[in-house]
Image (cartoon, rainbow, N blue to C red; front, side):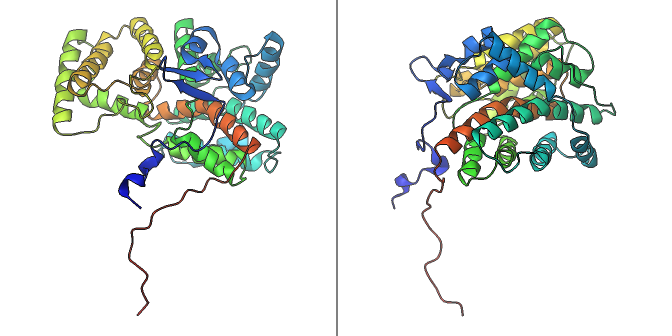
Length: 379
């Protein structure tokens, strides 16, 4: 087989249909069930978007009320799951905690071996509802703090922030967090979603597929990139007393040096988008509001300096992780918690794909071209 026939990383290979999402090349827009994600982020709650991904249409008032009631009823941290989390060392990465917790919840679910549409929908909602408590508690325990009980009077995003920080956040912060949850919810056959569909194609269960997807998302070439972006900012140095212009100058110098050394800089480029990640303008607008709210212009200086230097040198645009990282930092999340926030959001997209795979399943089993030694005899 010719080398050009090998599609490393499955680049350019179309393996199946999906009705969950697509990138519209004409408008460079990411569409969830046909709706541009920037419109959803501007007009919808995360609960409405989750309903859309799972059901194909936005909910009416009655449907939304029933749906949110189901989510709010499942927010409490399961004492057994909490004990498992407590047994893990605080040196473990928070993504390891998410992966373990998802597996434990699957093993304990009353419908663990039932993959009917009704059972999978229940498991998806239960997992989505429970993950914020796990992510929030894991950050708190690393600071010697106790778990915070959920509140049923708060929406998904506001409650997530409440359980993490133990106090209500102002509407601007809740709105920015809600926007990030919507933007991270779904992105077609990305690495973690494809992982979930591969596991599902074997007729394994939903929690096994999500557990595998979490493992894929941990990597810095995928979900871990938002964490890597903040490490870049830390390496340059965040100086709160610095002006926007001074921070931008230092960031440009850092980027020029990094590129000269052929260092891989996370948060830039995307395999799908050729003209820039369509989600970035919406997330950048949320970041701008957080910078203004917290009075941190030096972060905007670092952001602008890196972006401009990369654009001038390589004409490579930022991806969603680039503005999301500093946004979460400003809110008070630990850098290691950034990718678990991605998990809490992407559960909706993963499980939408899992249910779609189950409905029209074919075992995913690609071929490989062997390039090892020819057949030989054991001496």
